[in-house]
Image (cartoon, rainbow, N blue to C red; front, side):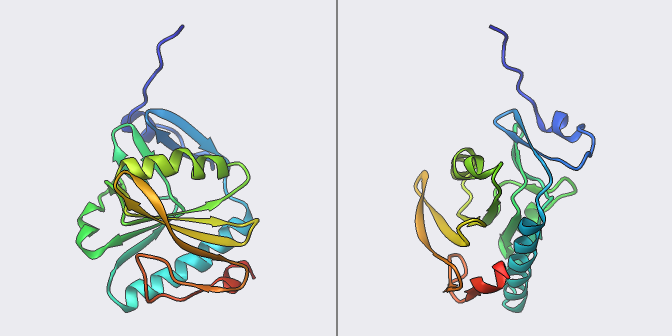
Length: 181
């Protein structure tokens, strides 16, 4: 049996840009195709809503993919949307975001749903990302998770055309109908 090759950030940074999304999960390369138009529409609508709220209340900064979240030398992820609270803005470097963001948002695609609900949920918990949102395009639903101890607990969610508020933004009212239209 061959020894497992563990890739590092240096290996990851040397990968040529080819339109695919690359991540390192505990030293193992994960590759997905570029997102579909429906995914990108929801990404834009949600990112704009979050950015407007965060900027209005001067809460920090919102970033959209592709941006590297370098959780360790062997774990680099690219959440669809990343939020950093004000006191974490020093984590932004020339390489990306060094360490855990305050919030990671993943928009499920058929090819990534099992990773986003499995491996990435576990990675985000292990690296202490306080909040994790999962947006399910097929179900037209959003669910929030908050780190409690070493695992996530559900903090709410909604589907269809309802309005929802999820931690860490208790006063943000997301109109889900605008995400899906």
